[in-house]
Image (cartoon, rainbow, N blue to C red; front, top):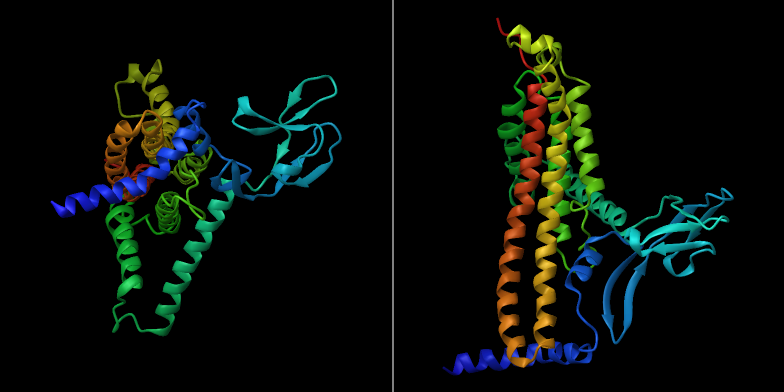
Length: 345
């Protein structure tokens, strides 16, 4: 009983500041969809925290080219050149005001939050694999089996290479594709895990960005279709079906449509799953402040519910981070394997 009272007192002390913050903002309506979409979108600065209306953030370099003059500008979010503005209707992207009154999107090569997050992930991956390579350089792997962190990385590499890539593509053709597929797996896995960190250097929604998943799916599309053998293309344009289905042509059109739907499915699957996970976590976080704005009773109840759901969702996202990397790699390997079909008599 005493332990229960202590827990309740600790919760009251912990959540009271949230109640005070919510009471200060009662005049402002909490728009949960707007807050969630704002955090999921890319940005020209890395927001860390806010206190009493002041924002602590890391400004990122903005690199834009004027469509009117062709001049390049290097600036930050707080020193945007005259004639340029952030278009809230286009998710805060930079637009340029033209002389005729119209607004256009200039050439934008800025280092945004997602770009910086990718660079951080690349640095983490380089550190991981250079560390493992250094271990193998110093030790004889035939007599000394790696343990600890190096052993865990080797286990993942062997599992993906042997159980996914080799078994899906086939022993004859898998070696040229193994480096690409292993890179994709570890990039998605580390990006997903770093994205779960609530503060810098994590928190960016990289794999929940349709542009990133489009590029990954496009790379798989090239790997499938640039190096597919003649049996693969024969199955598309002259499949083994009754002649009237090929003469109309029904089946060739369906098979050709499938060439584009496979990478499209890869793109949407990864994008939707990761964006949905981040959106749910952010929504439960907003429920905490929404509950306190409704009163102490609602605040305590909704906070307990939100905390439990946040713990559950974060644990689930750890599993999803691995599953999505595994599924993307497995499906890419399966599609590449279908492009290397052997001739059947």
